Length: 503
Image 1: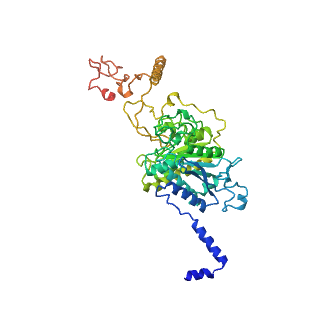
Image 2: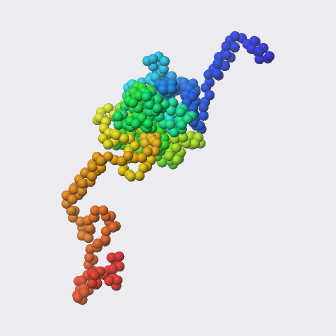
Image 3: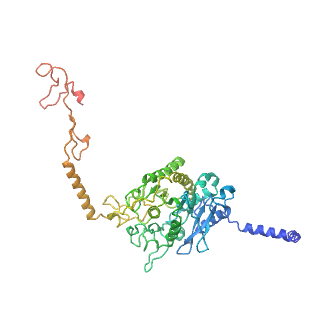
């Protein structure tokens, strides 16, 4: 009764202020717990909206596209250096670009394209391409958390770089993995006239796509054509648009505990492999100094021991010519694709230390890598383009496939036998090597040194020692002999003083 009386006594202006404050409180979005649990698709979008509402002056959500089941693929832009950031001085804001632009359709916003000498300063991070790799999604959300809610600790990086993070590329497959099949890897678009569902989105990009596996029932099925999937088309649109601004591209997967650089589709190294190796090593060192975890570094085809065609990292680095692109495989085989919830925060924090260091290193390397005048891309080898997952070393016993780029722990299969052509080429190489060895002239060796026989290690050969000349009596009693009394077999006797030296 007192509340009603108080309401009547308020003026119209006071009531309008109260109603506006109540409406504002209703718009407040609750914050999901991203550090200690695996979020649902709706909760991930809720967290992105929460950040956009809390930090509107430097955070913005972009809708990149829609999946087969009509879910939105969202990316979060974190751009500290923009004209709408009220925490910057008016003099600085005056010369900065806007936070976002209205897209051509007028419905969605798109990131601003920067021009000029300092245009390459955008870091692009994507995760959740493979549905079962839940920890990659949580790690991407942790990166967002560090750059927004903990932005004061990372202000140095924010002043230098702009970030676009897509925490969940494959929401259909992720929800299916969460609710029905935790081992599900592909997306959820069904294939016409078949009972099979899904395509591996990390095999669907247009870079030597024909070299990928074509069996529709495989976990690594490449799709009917390049960019046949709505998820990869959405990624292509944003990546193609931002290609001139991208400095560093990072793809998060699990669970190989490695940081890898191109190429995946062939066994050649890119021209700037040394710079890429330095970039990967900086992240490896930062994580090791944080908690001692040891990452491996190297090219994708080298560490995975097989070639992978149509991956997003090869597409970004090879087709779009982005200066730096890496794959980060989170830990570890013992923890699996979905580590216990107690490990989410630890893996996320340690990964951020490595990712932040790689971002800083990429900014330092930006002037050392010039991609515009590179020669054409190397072609995949003929015997590598037929079947993905075939091991390099021949073995007669069936074994499981090892880890592959992007968390490619495919289902257990037996390794296929090599073709006769492979054996013939190996035999020809061996014969050619033998002929070259026979044609080589014998080298002059010092006295007492034997040439190493084929198939023997030095310690397997009988020791041969040169005669030791000593002063003393010879067998005839005259001076100048070697002083060694030989037996009938030509060996020194036990009583010989020289025998102790020769042992």
